Image (cartoon, rainbow, N blue to C red; front, side, top):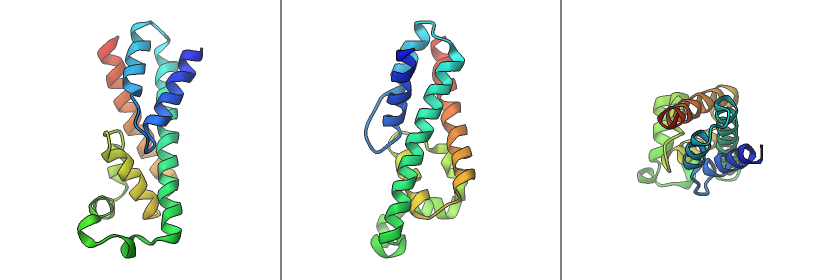
Length: 136
């Protein structure tokens, strides 16, 4: 059971602005025959909560530094992607490095929270399901 909490913590940290390797932890635990539903739940929820932490950091930043005034136009790439593609880009928050920036940008742009959580969760669940499938 402590291993599953360790996966949850690794997934949470991996989805904030700090680096992590939750996929490796998941892969190892899958090869050790831990229950797959529990592993997917722990990894997905932990990673989604970490992403929402980054989203809230973006939201808090927007309170003091509005997006349009802080960055020069050539540095607003992630913001522009979220603005033009909408919340659907949050399905890609599982991507390394880029995903954290997309979460932060969505918060900074004050994208709707509930639909954002759902899209982030779906993207992260799909990624962890593929990783688990590769190691079953």
